Length: 113
Length: 112
Image 1 (tube, rainbow over the protein chains, first blue to last red):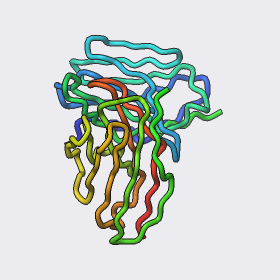
Image 2: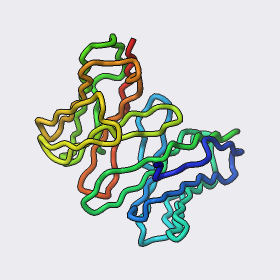
Image 3: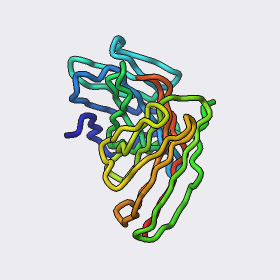
Image 4: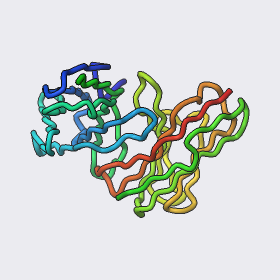
């Protein structure tokens, strides 16, 4: 049973436009969510996170939105740049004493110049 | 900056060989993890450790074991490598719970 779902395996956008990556989860115990970015042949790097007590967190060009009632979160990248082309993983954890992260399968973002 | 170092980037091993993947972190993190990444399957947790000599199975522990004799070092062991263990292996560490997890650069293992 996949608890964290990224239903779009790939996304292609034009440079300068907005990229929106979506993530759905099924476990209502999840209360902390993270996005990771991964280039080929490298380990994932942390991008941005959000706690369930918030519905939005912003860091420069990256904004994560959380809709708890819909069990849905999204990552917005504005404006998109060619260097943003990578695989993006959504991850979730119940937090507290449970430090196990559950990852989605990832979305490959391609930003075209 | 947190540094998670995986000693081997690329390995080729034969079926049946015993394989050791080593990982060291320099930030005194209690928690360490081993994941594997396969196309279309995302990151899957193999084992994690929340303290020295403590370990717990993740989602896909079969065919693997781990060792954590020192806080900074977490080893993944393939007792008898098989071709379906060809993958990218990622080590990670984290301080506390519900915090950011930091990954190493990955180890590409090919079993022939």
